[in-house]
Each structure stands twice: as structure tokens, then as C-alpha cells.
Image: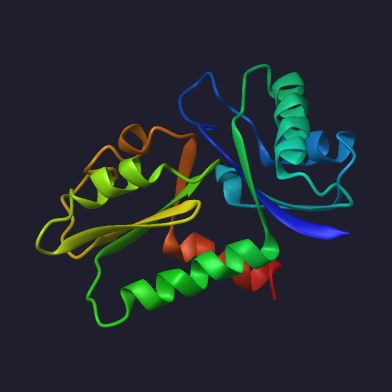
Length: 178
């Protein structure tokens, strides 16, 4: 059995996209996954499975979530080892910087080299964007209040993505990947 961490996109935003943790867990279990656990109500789910295809895992979860929630729930999955690697990359990228914010965009697929380069060209004097495989790190030394996505990262990447701050990523790695 392999442990995966799935990230649900665009839930619990506004009145029409409510999907409580208990419903997420029930839908995950109903889809045949084991050892299900959730963390905070932003769509972070640990599960184990014998399935090896990430695309099949994501597809099964998306189908179960749509049936339970009544709306589409894009889902992006990583093995526990992949998520731990993202956290290690984050530590390396933050070394020697005084970051106010560090967001990680978790991607369904790696962007093309051209899209990653275009995104990285948006770097500012104190801020940087670093793409590593299926994770795009926003390293913000300055932060404009109320602006979570200063460069339109998801749009620039052109791939399905959801974001979490580095604190959530580190917490999930400590909780589920150790």
C-alpha cells in the first residue's frame, strides 16, 4: 500500500462550494481508499491504496467527490515521498532569504519548459518563482496585503493547480509522511 496526499481545489469558498471534512473522508473511503485522514477544512486528504496510477487515483477521487459534493472537485495527488521532497525543496529555496510568505502551487502536471520560463521571468528584485516538476514555489520577501497570487500563477502555468502555504505543507509532511 502506498500513501498519497491529495489536495482538493476550490472547496469551501463561498456559499455554493461547501464540502466538509467529514464528507470528504466519507467520499474517499466510499471510493475504496484506506487509512483516510483529513487536515483542516481546505481539502488536504491522506489515503493509502494499492493503485499505482496517479491519474486513476485522481480520477476515482474526483468522481467520488463530485457525487458527494454535487460539484466538480479538481484533485491533485502526490505520494508521501513526493510531498516530502517538495518540503525539502522549499527549505532549500528559502535558505538565506527573509521571506514574508512562501506559497507552493501544487500542479496536476509539470508545466512545459516555455511556461515555466515565462513564469520565472516574472521574478522581482525581492521575489522569485521557482518551478520544480509539479510544484511552483512563490518566494515573497515583500507582501502586498490581501494579494495571495500576485502574478496569476495558475493562469501563467496553464495547468490545473491548487496552492498551500509552506506551513501547511510542512505540517502535512510531519503528520503524514514521517
